Structures are given as C-alpha cells and as structure tokens.
Image (cartoon, rainbow, N blue to C red; front, side):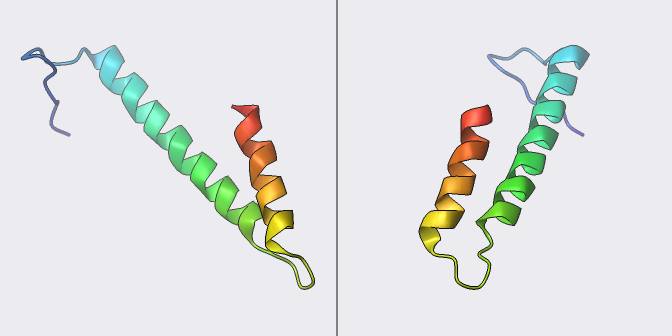
Length: 59
C-alpha cells in the first residue's frame, strides 16, 4: 500500500497502522449499523432508528 504524505512527510509505520485499524473499525461499525437498520415485519422506521441511535451513542 502506498504511503500518503502529509505536509510532505511520509507517515510512520505506527501512524499507518493506526489509520488502517481505524478504517477496519469503521467498516465493522458500518456492518453493525446496517444489520440493526433492517426492519422486522410490523416494525416502523422509528424502531430501526432507535437501534442505530444506541449504537452511535456507544462511540
């Protein structure tokens, strides 16, 4: 993976690793949000929104 430069300086391995870990956590969170957004028969959008709000409050 190419190392992006910030202000002309290449990131350290630790910085690169931290960014990659944050990206993985974001993907995981997106999957979790998608899963709880799915509505069961008889549920309304408010039900899904309430579940999403709970997840977002955790962070």
